[in-house]
Image (cartoon, rainbow, N blue to C red; front, side, top):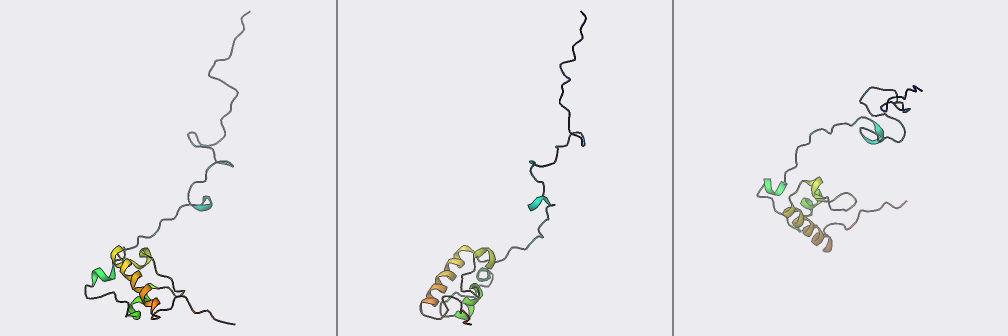
Length: 117
């Protein structure tokens, strides 16, 4: 009656083939890297935009100057956001107010001109 039992540490589970210490890759696993599982690309460093009105103190925001305000309006007639124009919060508010006033008295178009076919 000398039956030998296998050691408790051995089991029927087999480790998947691959490098030791690495997670298995396959369906159901999270992709590593960028979108679609590809390698991540580093974004090139972009210099922070400086508020044009803070840098040049002699520039003023006036609703009667549509030539200045056109820099802050897209060709579709939308006001350009701060992260694109680089303005500080205070000057962006002033520009927004000036654009709305200029639109109200028809110095700036409210929307883009649509081409009629």
